[in-house]
Picture (cartoon, rainbow, N blue to C red):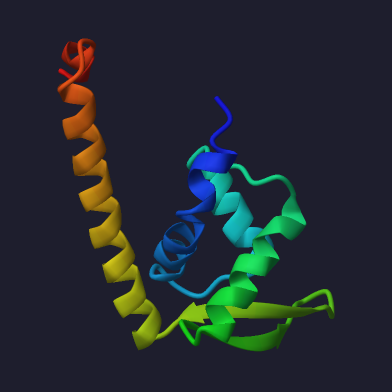
Length: 113
Protein backbone atom coordinates (compact mmCIF):
# COMPACT_ATOMS: atom_id res chain seq x y z
CA UNK A 1 0.00 0.00 0.00
CA UNK A 2 1.27 3.46 -0.87
CA UNK A 3 1.00 5.46 2.36
CA UNK A 4 2.67 8.58 0.92
CA UNK A 5 -0.58 10.46 0.36
CA UNK A 6 -1.96 9.31 3.71
CA UNK A 7 0.96 10.59 5.76
CA UNK A 8 1.40 13.82 3.83
CA UNK A 9 -1.08 15.66 6.07
CA UNK A 10 0.44 14.13 9.18
CA UNK A 11 4.11 14.46 8.32
CA UNK A 12 4.51 17.52 10.54
CA UNK A 13 3.34 15.47 13.54
CA UNK A 14 5.59 12.53 12.62
CA UNK A 15 8.70 14.70 12.28
CA UNK A 16 7.99 16.58 15.50
CA UNK A 17 7.54 13.24 17.23
CA UNK A 18 10.92 12.04 15.97
CA UNK A 19 12.52 15.27 17.15
CA UNK A 20 10.88 14.93 20.57
CA UNK A 21 13.34 12.06 21.11
CA UNK A 22 16.34 14.32 20.45
CA UNK A 23 18.11 16.40 17.84
CA UNK A 24 18.42 15.02 14.34
CA UNK A 25 19.22 15.94 10.74
CA UNK A 26 17.29 15.47 7.52
CA UNK A 27 18.66 12.13 6.31
CA UNK A 28 18.43 10.62 9.79
CA UNK A 29 14.79 11.75 10.06
CA UNK A 30 14.04 10.14 6.68
CA UNK A 31 15.58 6.87 7.87
CA UNK A 32 13.51 6.96 11.07
CA UNK A 33 10.31 7.45 9.02
CA UNK A 34 11.29 4.53 6.80
CA UNK A 35 11.97 2.37 9.87
CA UNK A 36 8.27 2.79 10.65
CA UNK A 37 7.27 2.04 7.04
CA UNK A 38 6.52 5.71 6.27
CA UNK A 39 8.43 6.33 3.07
CA UNK A 40 8.56 9.66 1.31
CA UNK A 41 9.14 10.13 -2.41
CA UNK A 42 12.81 10.98 -2.02
CA UNK A 43 15.49 12.22 0.31
CA UNK A 44 14.84 15.83 -0.69
CA UNK A 45 11.16 15.64 0.21
CA UNK A 46 11.89 15.96 3.94
CA UNK A 47 13.42 19.42 3.63
CA UNK A 48 10.25 21.39 2.81
CA UNK A 49 8.62 20.11 6.01
CA UNK A 50 11.76 20.89 8.03
CA UNK A 51 11.79 24.40 6.55
CA UNK A 52 8.13 24.82 7.51
CA UNK A 53 8.82 23.66 11.07
CA UNK A 54 11.69 26.14 11.32
CA UNK A 55 9.68 29.00 9.77
CA UNK A 56 6.83 28.35 12.21
CA UNK A 57 9.43 28.44 15.03
CA UNK A 58 8.57 24.92 16.20
CA UNK A 59 12.18 23.76 15.84
CA UNK A 60 15.56 25.34 16.34
CA UNK A 61 18.45 24.65 14.03
CA UNK A 62 22.18 24.74 14.31
CA UNK A 63 25.12 23.62 12.24
CA UNK A 64 27.72 21.14 13.35
CA UNK A 65 30.87 19.87 11.67
CA UNK A 66 31.00 16.12 11.08
CA UNK A 67 34.11 14.00 11.44
CA UNK A 68 34.43 14.01 7.65
CA UNK A 69 34.55 17.81 7.59
CA UNK A 70 31.03 18.38 6.24
CA UNK A 71 28.62 20.79 7.87
CA UNK A 72 25.38 19.19 8.95
CA UNK A 73 22.19 21.08 9.93
CA UNK A 74 20.56 19.69 13.05
CA UNK A 75 16.94 20.24 14.02
CA UNK A 76 15.76 20.31 17.61
CA UNK A 77 12.18 20.63 18.84
CA UNK A 78 11.55 23.60 21.14
CA UNK A 79 8.73 24.40 23.59
CA UNK A 80 6.46 25.81 20.85
CA UNK A 81 7.09 22.66 18.86
CA UNK A 82 6.20 20.44 21.81
CA UNK A 83 2.91 22.31 22.21
CA UNK A 84 2.25 21.93 18.48
CA UNK A 85 3.01 18.20 18.68
CA UNK A 86 0.57 17.78 21.57
CA UNK A 87 -2.13 19.56 19.54
CA UNK A 88 -1.45 17.45 16.43
CA UNK A 89 -1.55 14.22 18.46
CA UNK A 90 -4.89 15.26 19.99
CA UNK A 91 -6.26 16.04 16.50
CA UNK A 92 -4.94 12.70 15.17
CA UNK A 93 -6.57 10.72 17.99
CA UNK A 94 -9.89 12.51 17.45
CA UNK A 95 -9.76 11.86 13.70
CA UNK A 96 -8.83 8.23 14.26
CA UNK A 97 -11.78 7.83 16.67
CA UNK A 98 -14.21 9.50 14.24
CA UNK A 99 -13.11 7.34 11.30
CA UNK A 100 -13.26 4.16 13.35
CA UNK A 101 -16.77 5.10 14.49
CA UNK A 102 -17.85 5.71 10.91
CA UNK A 103 -16.37 2.43 9.70
CA UNK A 104 -17.95 0.50 12.58
CA UNK A 105 -21.38 1.78 11.54
CA UNK A 106 -21.02 0.22 8.08
CA UNK A 107 -21.85 -3.31 7.03
CA UNK A 108 -18.19 -4.32 7.18
CA UNK A 109 -17.76 -2.87 10.69
CA UNK A 110 -17.12 -6.32 12.14
CA UNK A 111 -13.68 -6.23 10.45
CA UNK A 112 -12.62 -3.69 13.11
CA UNK A 113 -13.01 -6.27 15.89
